[in-house]
Length: 328
Image (cartoon, rainbow, N blue to C red; front, side, top):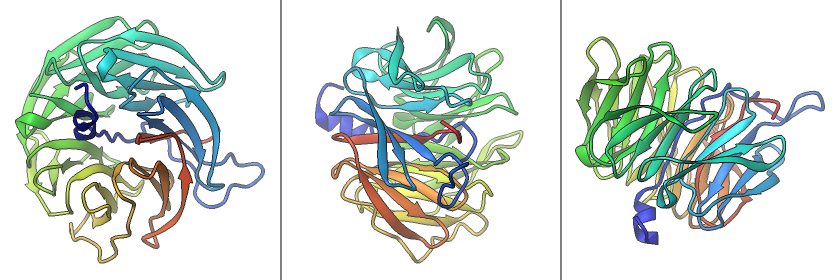
């Protein structure tokens, strides 16, 4: 994965792991909702205030950042660099890269445990899910999964990780206590991004090549229960805090798909996100944000009105973003 074409294939969207920020305009005593954005060509992390539509800070990174995840306390953001076999830990208080860890072959997707002690990283080339000590970067566990694992999400309550095995057209289910793969669930073609419902009962999987959304019942025997069409090349997926709405960013059509989680019907409004949208995250009950790789923008979305509220310029080629816990 050394060319721009390969990197464009490997767009990454990962949901925020921390609490959702409050909706509506920020008051003087209420910190504004922020999102952290990685820009791949610029090799930087931007902190964006989505209410003010302003970049609050820019932090330089190692080359070709791809995936990112925030710690639950909002103190740190972890970034993967597939071409460098590297993970960076960014300290947000100081605005610096506090540590870098060599990880596997091509670390791509990433998640942080709720207690901040562990990282989980999907290794695109090694076909593995790797567990790391978040403070030292030492590998503490590894399990073989499907080919070209991309996005991943963690269900802390169930003690499980779900990984999109892109080239195997499946999702791997991994028990975190002993890093054992419990099951695989067949899905559409080229699964890439994942999002869990708030209670963990459903997993939503964006399938890039088949243009649909796999809906998985995560019960005792995980299984796909539906696969509605959502658009052309869905690359990002997010769920609202009430679990009622699923948002999908479609890269090829440049549009936002808004799906009713109960009926799985696609809403009539499909606002245009941009020329090449990728990652998407929910920031509050009424706000979401996506990135547009081609236009170097963060796109602010009003979920209830199904409209675009504004756009914020960031560094060249934004790939992915994550909502930060309120107060950072």
